[in-house]
Length: 248
Length: 383
Ligand SMILES: Cc1cc2nc3c(=O)[nH]c(=O)nc-3n(C[C@H](O)[C@H](O)[C@H](O)COP(=O)(O)OP(=O)(O)OC[C@H]3O[C@@H](n4cnc5c(N)ncnc54)[C@H](O)[C@@H]3O)c2cc1C
Image (tube, each protein chain N blue to C red):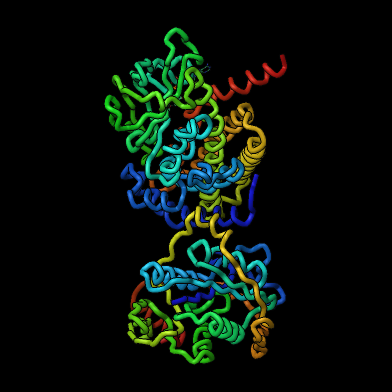
């Protein structure tokens, strides 16, 4: 079976984010960009499935600007067999991404599409779910464990109440949570070899996908500065202080 | 010379991440236990760090000198003991074979050195021959199609874990100087080769050093590097030229780390009601460190680019080694000063790095020897 993994180019998680003065978004010029960490986990899981002999090919997909090919190169260096770049210059909304992935799923017929449960840039957390709906296939979100069993996958999900294990028929959509695995370090020789692996470039028009207009960001603001704390002498004082402030 | 900006950036990024996430958190443990854990050694091998400078045709990354120093800047940001583990395979241990070895010698050793399957060390120094390396006394007497080696090599980095040694020995006892010396590749399991006990050192704990003793060790003539007698000293000097640039780049990496530590501390620590970073005398220590470190970085990059065009950069490489190793000594001293009493305490990285960097002014040619190399070149050119 084929596995399809979507990877998004986002501001590196070590960067201290700065909001643009006009509130139209965050500063990305000259800022280090990386693969969304949850997507890295999805990539790693796909590699493990392939290494266990349960898949033959891994296709990495990104939707974004020309430079997003850097993240595809990382995916190829990690071990993806080939990559598809859907070149789009505008910001991508979850619904557009889901439509693109649906179009690619129709074309490639993967047994599983793996996505991060969310991207750390806009924290929308809905692409996987939307894809499952459009594709009309089962979804297993927030996965912390994935076991393949023939035409089924047993997936443990991290939910508020604890861990929930479900079984889904393949093909299915799986979105990955933080504790699913620890992604490998990319091996240096593999980075050199990745240059020779193919990246296909395509566009929304080629895929017959219409960009979703639904969502508009009206303002971006930094979180409020942290206020200085207050030291209290005893538990009693703490409790009455919290009560005074109407917090308990 | 950078062959592909994008690939290089990814390589450096991968190294940066490994250093930050995996190595820096282990520094104290490695210093306390005086060893790099086996699983970290395996990870460094898997990552490809043992083959940075080994040609691609033999399974390495074949980094150009410019690419190699850029990688060394990154590797330098953590305890030098980690770098030392794969340093000899990339540098002094393998370069003799790469630069002057026969095809057969390259085929036999380089692929396994590139993966880290085997570890190589470099045996030049002896109890009575340090800076005056050309006076070395280890002998290699020809006997049929073998050479019989006798002598002791001192303070050999990675010898305790080495599988193969590049050994400089005298094949012509009549010729007392450099021309009587030949270079050999010697397998560790050759009968007659033994190791001394590991030395206890001032710093760089986890980077083991011991003596290597040759007692009637019979080495096949096919292991004479380049198949030629009398050129071993030249080989050693070429190896050291390249090694000096690499070491210089590591010095810059450590200096950048020290500056980062000092800067961080200066912003946190308050005295007289303000951050010590706001005192101009502290700022001077920081600024001097930054400027000197930047100077070293620039001259190393310049020399590395030059070496990618023509191999003979002895004078420039000696300038880099002298300046960068002395520079990191001063930067370490200032970093400790900025930390005040904390800088004298084990729990702060600067205390450890201060001891670690002392070595850079001594091995692969002391500062005084670099001065001699530079001045001799100047005189030769002027004459
Ligand atoms: C931790 C460690 C690891 C090492 N690893 C290796 C290794 O892997 N392989 C290897 O072969 N060697 C190795 N060495 C040896 C190292 O290269 C030598 O210690 C170094 O070259 C200096 O030689 P020496 O110690 O004999 O000092 P000496 O040569 O005895 O020098 C003593 C002092 O005299 C000065 N001096 C000497 N000659 C002159 C001169 N002509 N003019 C002015 N001043 C002079 C020196 O600069 C120095 O200050 C290592 C050493 C250490 C400490």
